[in-house]
Length: 148
Image 1 (cartoon, rainbow, N blue to C red):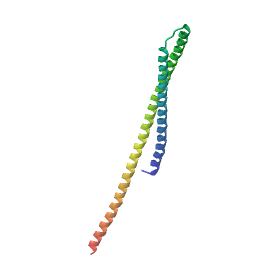
Image 2 (image 1 turned 30 degrees about the vertical axis):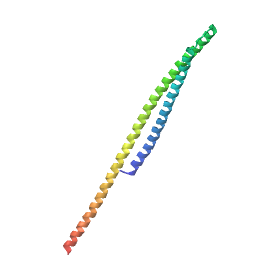
Image 3 (image 1 turned 120 degrees about the horizontal axis):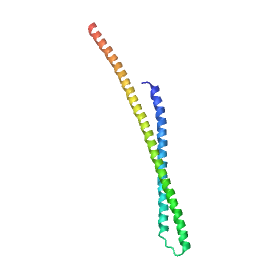
Image 4 (image 1 turned 90 degrees about the vertical axis):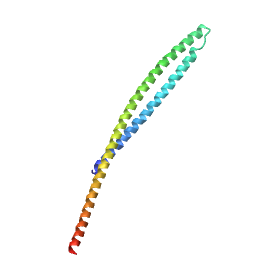
């Protein structure tokens, strides 16, 4: 295994790692948006509950209350749509992050395999050298026994 292949994999791994980190940041942002949308919806629903429990004594108060309730009802609908959109975005962001994470892990596993192959090749080369040295020593000792 030559060094060029390992260096190429290192470059691919760096790109994949950056993509994975970017998609993870996007997921965190999407989850914060879901939380923010949920808090906004809860706040509007609380205001709607407070407003609906008010008592009115005059027709003008009734009309004002009705208009306020209608406006808050529309705000609740809008907030629910916003929350649903944020949830959909978060699901999509999680899917992208998982795909990027799998791609990164695949490259890391390939790097590990190539490193193991390179180490095995190196060990075989070392064993060959050691065999050569041992063979030469054996021949020398045999030659010395014959001569003496």
